[in-house]
Amino acid sequence: MLYLLPLLLCAYLIVRRACQSFGTQTRDGLCRPPRVPDWLPFVGSALSMAAGDGFWQRAELKHGSAVRIRAMGQTRVFALRPSLINYVYKNSDAFDFVHYRKLLQSTIFGLTMEQAFADMFDDHVFPSHHRLMQPGALAPVINSYLGLLEADLSSRSSGARGIDLAEVAREILYTNSCRAFFGRSFPAARLRPLFDAFDNTFPLLSLPLPACVRVCLLRPRERLLDELTAWLAAVGAHERDAMAAPVRMMLDAADAQGWDTRAQAGLVLAEFWALAANAPRAAAWTIAELVRRPAVVARARAELGAALASHALAIPALVRLAPAQLVAALPFLHDCLRETLRLRTSSFALRRVAHDVVVPAHVLGPAHAAGMRLCKGEDIVCVSRHNQVAPTGDWGADAGVWDVGRWDGKKGTMMPFGGGVSMCEGRHFAAVEIMAFVALWLHAFDTAVVADSLAPDMTRIGLGALQAKGALRVDVTPRAC
Image 1 (cartoon, one colour):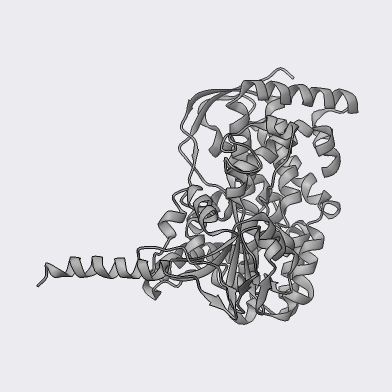
Image 2: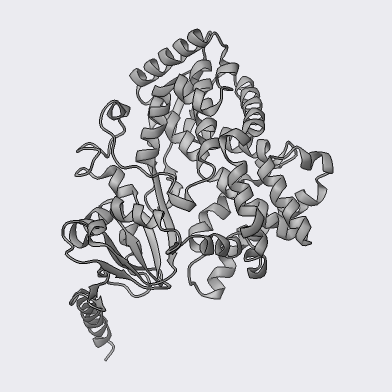
């Protein structure tokens, strides 16, 4: 009889898939987002989602603006077209982000549920953090970062051979941005292996996994929280005053609530991850894409030289211009960053449907004669990357290729930082952080590629800058500036 089990399993999977594909679900006469069929219970479409951009492009082509997808035990609605994504972003009352922002403080960063849903977040922490991450408020932390960055690059002035440029760039930004935000005593180098281990488990921590699996996944986070707790306990008043304003604000709010050092470490971990998980990788991709193309490096250096001459500034003063002035002084370098963000990011923006919503037909596109109903309590995820890289989209048939020249002409849809109330609050610091690093590197070093196997890892999507696999080996020699 055992030989019948494979046959029965195959029959079950076929019937299951057929049932998913049969008919169109409606509610109150309005269509619901169509279900993307899958073969495997619990796993669902997770493997297909991680296979690359083609999954999303095929889903949009076949099903339209929105689909329902089951993956790793969770069924969610995914918004695929820019018109629907913008509709979700603009209607924050109907599509709630704050609930998930709080929930992640517990499921990912280790606060208790009571702490994560404390009134202080709505009343003080969230609005204050948004204000303190605006360009006008960032000058002290930017100046601190730039001083650390210049000293770091100066220590490398003898050059190097055969280094992995992507890893070196990530290390430079990780270390110096952490020290700028958390103070000079922050043990960034010692925490790096723990941070990477935690970062690798990050996408799994919110999944409905068995308790025995979750315990294993939580070990890197708990070890990291142990280290952060010990560091905070040893920080003196003077060192705390030297931290960036957003960090001080959160710790002061936690003090006012009577939270212990372990809970404060959870707040620090959330800021630590936001700071260190994406911008260093985006910087690594940006410098990698430039040095792969000597003509682009030459043009960027020419622009840099012209900016130094026209502003009558040395390079340290140039990178200390206000963020908007820096972009205006180095527009080509800014285009290089934007092209990298277009091609090397994958962002999911999660919302909870606060009440039943009928999405108007004009938002969904010409194929929809009537609206679409989204139901209270559903999760909706805005997926924008495939619109940035699709060969049939606004960016052209070569959208899958890095080409800064495309920014000289027509612009397409691009949302690397998300949108609406969940738009990345660190985007202003990240832009200066990356542009200053690239400008200083190009000014200080000649970089020759000797071996290039660097490629994006598409198995981890939706969290910002794509992780890399492989390496970009280069020889670095100091320039006579």
